[in-house]
Length: 145
Image (cartoon, rainbow, N blue to C red; front, top):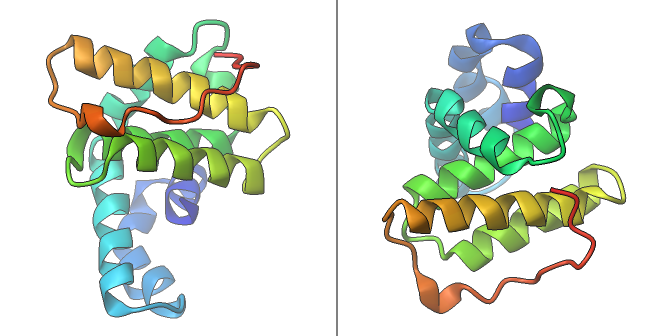
């Protein structure tokens, strides 16, 4: 999420430097850094596709008005929902909500939940295979999406 935030703020020219600098400077196991790199580079490569799904799910909110933090959280989660079938949707959505609660505003958790719920429904309606057995993610009652 931090790397996607940096890319959003600084632009695509940062991507080649991220692997050498950002991911090598952060602690963690090699496997964790590799996964973070795969998700970051994958989400950035499909950023337009992710943004389109997010924009379609933000009914009362213009995409351009999203904070860079919320945008980064949503991009990562949408990328994972669409391209990482090994991660149950429940896990993706729960992690995104927790990131929003930790790094964004008080209202971001319910907002992220509502947006991702709408994206997941759209993916299912479009025939994308998602693991329905993990579909019991928390639903905040104050969703603003």
